[in-house]
Length: 59
Image 1 (cartoon, rainbow, N blue to C red):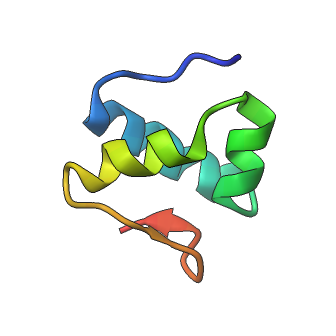
Image 2 (cartoon, one colour):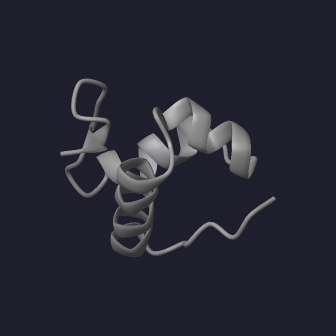
């Protein structure tokens, strides 16, 4: 399992960078890094962000 930041703002920055540079989808990122997709989405929703599939980013 790859490191997953516990601070939501750091997680947001890391996830959006990886989605932009390396992964075609949130599912691909989470599968590759063995992260729980629901936990990632929940953590980022708590600070007001949601995953937009068309943008492939949390907005």
